[in-house]
Length: 160
Image (cartoon, rainbow, N blue to C red):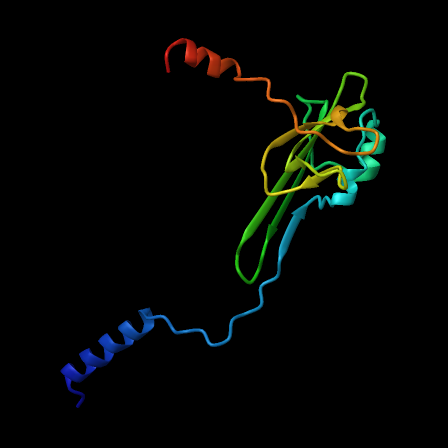
C-alpha cells in the first residue's frame, strides 16, 4: 500500500511546482504595433499659412479625428508600442483653420527650428506655433509669450 505521508508530500510538491514560474529560455517574437498618422519632418515643413483644407489633407493625409464641435480643428495622433521592450511612444499634432477654411496655426509636438528647418517634430510636447509667423524662407520664430492667462491672473489677484 501507498503510504499516506508519501502521497501528501507528492501532492504538496505538485501544487508548489505548479505555482512556480519557469524561466524562459526562448522568448516569443512580438511585433511593433503602430496606429495613427505618421508625420515626417518633410510633411510638416510644407505647411504654410493660407493653405486650404484640401491642400493640408494632401500634405498630411486624412486626420485621425475631425470633431464636429471643433470644425476648424483637425487632430493627427500617432501611437507606437515596441514589441520587444513594450515601450510606448505617442504623438499629437493639430492643425487649426480660420473662418475662411485657411490654415492659421498648428499645435502639438512641434517646436520652432533653426533657419535650415522650418518646424521640427520634437520631444517638446504641446508647443503652439502660429503658422502665420513663418517667414517667406520657411524659418520660424518662437511664439511670443502673452503673459499669464486668465486663471493665473485671477489666482494672483486673490493672493495665491
